[in-house]
Length: 322
Image (cartoon, one colour):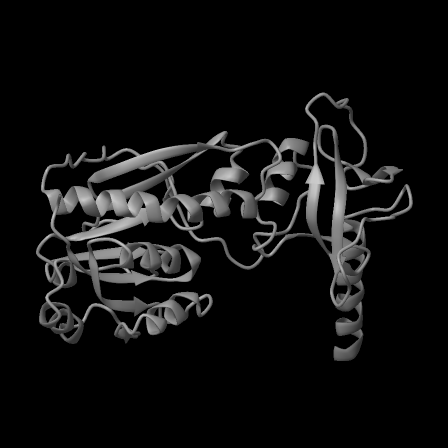
């Protein structure tokens, strides 16, 4: 049986909290837990404090103080699970066995941020989970373990996220045992891969002239616990939480964004090539509901109205200057 390792866990959320709980029931010991500067929730901190573990929360993780803390605690291996700072060489060298990172992508593809969302947006039929050694690049270090999981046509962000969170502790435990045993393969990544930046404000808006499959994928990719896809109905902002597209549906040209059908399941909206069944929506301050929009309603920006409004503002501005 392999010896136990002394670890420092850098992380956030349920991924890291579940991993910490799993580690505590095995041969390895967590010497310290390091939180994000702005944790997404208090899950990891609560578990760490309940276990009586030291909790750190540095504004900058790459300092001599942090290096001294790791060395003083006898940390042999660093472990990153949903941590949001890049580790610089000084910190990486503080743990004799290096640092491992859990990444929800099939490296070398899907390097970067928000990769579960991006995988769904791209319509991937499987998603990878990788444990790799950290180096000075972004998700470019040697691969230790890798698994893939299927993604169904209607799977949402929450569905896929839950699968990754469930598999993470088991994979990390296996990885720790491999490193502790000293017999394992480090598989270098090829230089060629794909990188994704973080999604930000404004990325959630739908463009109804896009193909139905693209809209279907975007809605499910940023559904809860994401921000939800957005559109306009007149001057009202609508969040679309759930929608569906069947590739067998007819393809034809008409006005994108127009409601062309209704049923008990929702509203049928014309897209750039076919239609999309919008099933669950929400307006600010209201509960989610099935849309009951009249046929002929138009979703999205009315560019003619936008241009007319700008022209009116310019006219008034000219009059004010005279």
